[in-house]
Image 1 (cartoon, rainbow, N blue to C red):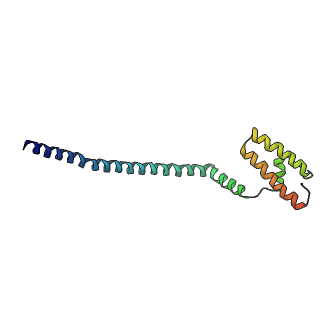
Image 2: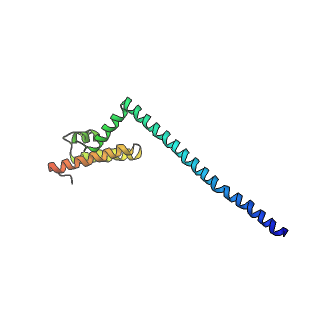
Image 3: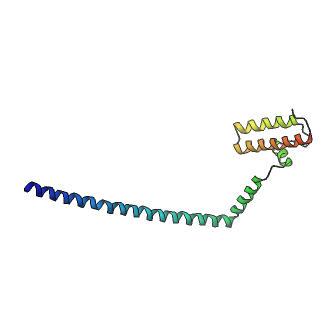
Length: 136
């Protein structure tokens, strides 16, 4: 009889120990949800403040203008300025300037400038094809 009563007592203690785990899990889940809500509100507030500051300084307007400019095609004049050539330059001179500037920016410059040089060559390539000037 003593053995059976000991087992019954152990089972009750084990059940009590297991029944507190769901409570702790729920508590932890609630803390995580509340914490993420607080963090989310703080991020949203910081974002709103950043937009407000950007509007005050004109940064937002400048960014929008840059995006609009980036969507437009490069003009022939801009392409000539980037490559440093005149309207009288031959296609061979354009290719020489392109090679020099492209390689220089590949080694010591920036990818942005390198892409500008490439876009300038593409722009002038279409101009020279349209004019009928031989480029090959």
